[in-house]
Image (cartoon, rainbow, N blue to C red):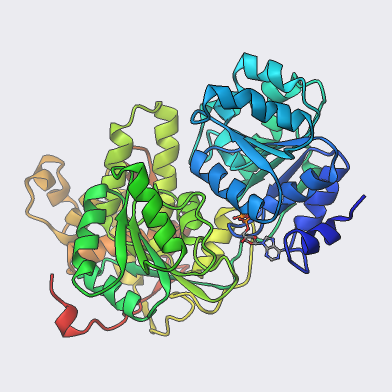
Length: 518
Ligand code: ADP
């Protein structure tokens, strides 16, 4: 029997395992159900591909996306490994021949969608195969606590349990909070001692936040110009905005294309190929772009319109620097974008419970954009781990002096107290700044002691409130219309026990006047 190390070298051409790979492979070869949580680009595929080549039978890979399967199968073929996919686009007359080849040991890896595995007849057909392992890719889709729930994933264990060959299970994901990890483990029968969780930190990524900047397009142009001939992705949240950004950047002689689900399949494939083979430098895309893109030398990822949760943000931003080289990822944050995400949640058909969770996740993005903590550390802690400050994100590098804003904060907190904690941040900001808005009279805010006590703009007050929430002096409670409450840490400020120091945001790169067109 060949050893994993030999296969790594001979088949894949790599000399050393990446963190966690060897441990996962060894658990799998010992027939243990295992959970592998590794960052994007961490090399999860090899964790089941090497066992697939060592074990005598077939490895079934459950994967959510057809495009993802196609890419994987193509790259396996390049390494001389025969794999096939069975999904809704496989013609019926090809299904039996593929299963026959798997039965004959000619196909070692069979990629299937979770929906197919849920079909009774397919489960029956699988019983003719000797299946050693079921690898469940993107395993966070099993959990309603995750950000990408797929109902068919819930039925996986039923499908696997009825298989006569009693395969072991390997669940793989890049984005699982402790709650999601627990859920995956419960759903797929994985004991805690078989969790292999490598660090979430991506030390080659430089994280930046640009909060409430004007001229977003001009900044993006500047960032692209700072990366001449280097590949980058710009994510936006609607097709319309993708087209707009694309139109703007096109004027500057950048080889780029827009990508979203509204384009034909053939055009999308063409754009993916052009990007993969460096004929395009930049892709402006909705989140339809990325899953299954294995371009290792993406040097920058910009989120032009923030993100709806930290999980997808980290997954998308994590497409930069998969080759381990220094790369930068930038989140451009505007409160208006968050309002739009909130609206998407409001309008969705999801259950109230699910919506509540999405609102909470969205709040964490606002916190990320407003924290003064190390950004890498913020993300890693979000996923339940810890790491040292990275010393290179926009917060770590912010050398602006800290300003004592305790007096402002005391007034804001007093206002929240006088308003009885019944309102959200815009009402609080209006009240403490003394707005002439009719609403102030309706709710009696104009009669309160701290009404109009803070003589700075409402925008600045909102930004201080976001900072206070991100740093746990205040909390945002509730779903569709969240209200602001004061935490114990916040009361300590009012009691004079704690001071609040806030750094001015770091000034983003200078934008040349000639680019400042919009
Ligand atoms: P992900 O964890 O995001 O699924 P992949 O499995 O696609 O990551 O691997 C990312 C890239 O890293 C691929 O190009 C893969 O070939 C490469 N890779 C995987 N393992 C190793 C290794 N041990 N040494 C070097 N490169 C590796």
